Amino acid sequence: MFKGHDITFVTNEHGEPVLLFIGKRRPDGIIAGERYTRTIKRQPDGVAVKSSHWDLKGKTQR
Image (cartoon, rainbow, N blue to C red; front, side, top):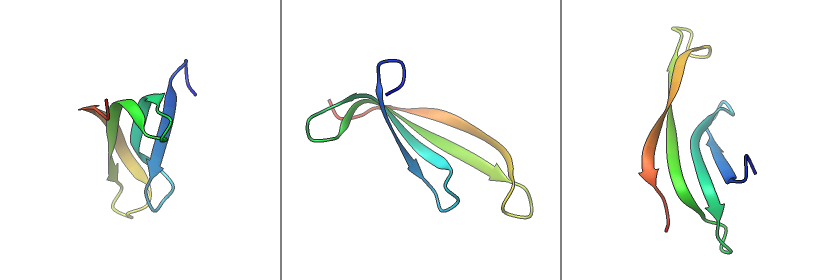
């Protein structure tokens, strides 16, 4: 829960969140609300994060 909303993160192989679902969790466990995706740009070493940002991708399960 965050500010009255249910949230779920999906992480990548580095344990960093790359998908975010925020809204109201239904009895079947699916969140009805909004979906965000994260774009991560890495340093040339391929490990350190150079920059990242979240994009709103729209509504999820109604």
